[in-house]
Image (cartoon, rainbow, N blue to C red):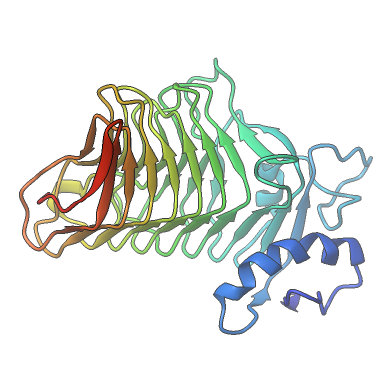
Length: 311
């Protein structure tokens, strides 16, 4: 097993200089979130859709696997999968079942990107399912061309903890049902979704149903008749979800910025410092105890104002 210490300037335990250089931009952006450089106790697997090597073992860029699914068949707990820019067609869901796994896209999310997508006639395949603890997904674009599917669906077999999704782009093309669906039967406690871009999902960009879930610093484009973020504590439970500093942009036609469908029977939830622009309904109301909804800015054609509605 490889034990590797990452810093923004060096990749200490590898002589693979191209790998070190490819990681540095990512590390520069994200190591500031740690008090000390993280220690990764696992293997590195490489995925590149354009790799033409006759024999691929996923251990270098030159011998990279051509699909994320193949890499997952080799990965175990604590491993890292690095994905080169390219288009990755999904015909069956990418199933993440390894704890402490990282899947990191190495391209620029807006150009030269990693793109995972499905086909219009695939019967509604979810692009990725996550049934593991402490999984990190970053730097990847997801496009759901088919309806009745989600880009990422979490906790479908049991409750899974501390999933971190960040710096990703989600395009629904008006067809994909959800970008991130945090599960109905099982919980996804402490899920963190941040710094992502969401566009044009048929039902909602985020289906939020996770105890202590935190959704912050995202940009959400809402189509007419759809929802930006839907707060749906299952059967009245799963408290303490927080929505903080999201920018939600609507089509001003029967759309909703943040919809409160259910509320927790115990505990609270918070909607704080979001900016909701051009939505027909900014934040829906539903009676509950101990809810906080403060310092949210709602704008329209005639201006805007801070609102503190009682959800």
